[in-house]
Amino acid sequence: MRNASASSLESTPRPVVAIGNEYGPDVVFAVHSHRRAQLMYASSGVITVNTASGSWVVPPERAVWVPPDTEHSVHMSGKVRMRSLYITAQAASAKGLPQACCVVEASPLLQALLEVAIDLPLHYAPLGRASRVMQLLLDEVNVMEVQPLNAPMPKDPELARICLALLQAPGPDASIDRLAAQLAMSRSSFTRHFRSETGMSFGRWLQQARFLHALRQIASGSQVTQAALDAGYSSASAFTAAFRQVLGHAPSRYFSGEDLPRRGTHKAGF
Image (cartoon, rainbow, N blue to C red; front, top):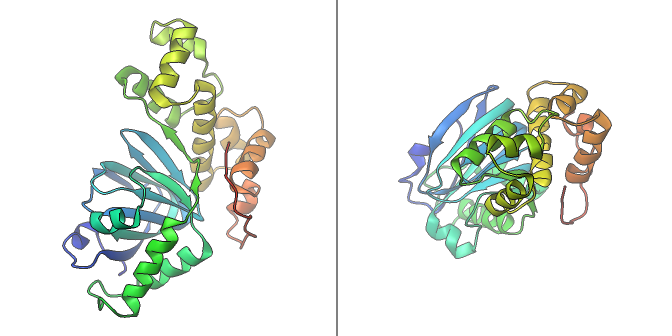
């Protein structure tokens, strides 16, 4: 079903339904939730999903999983062509699908199935072809590899405020000493507190925040060099090296729209 709202799907008597929508740059959906789980995939543009526990950035060929009843906001960078799958809590649980937000790699099969699914009626026959397409989609979602395209958010309000500001503008001058001073902490206390709140070191978290910020900027039309420097990288080549490690290609080629050879299955990382 194309150009439909999520609210129209909540009462649909099928466990899995799909819709397709297109959005202009900088469209924002304020904090909301669905009774169904949602898988969002964009063949163009970049999606950012924010929750109280983290921020997930989704470039093309990736998708983001949002569990049922999860409060989240969505921000589009660039023109976004989105396909969304909505799955009842019962169906998601029966398949053992994730209970927390995550970004997954969208295989060619998953992408093709989503294009088929958005043209199927909402009230498809329970035992027909459409039902088999939806079940195959669930199977494909279940085997997708999780990608490290998120930055966890701390629960501490003051630290969360600092992290949110860094996600929006990481810049080159973020330092442990400066941030520790803002919280009236010693350097060692800040590093322990940050790891306790986020599960990772501040240096690793900042590295991810910079990478995610640069991704959004490129999708919004910035040149690679400018996006890298604005995000706090020392050079465009440093960002390109990180981009190749995570997404397998140089950023200029990745966002060019051309078909890219896919990498073999592996565990991605920063």
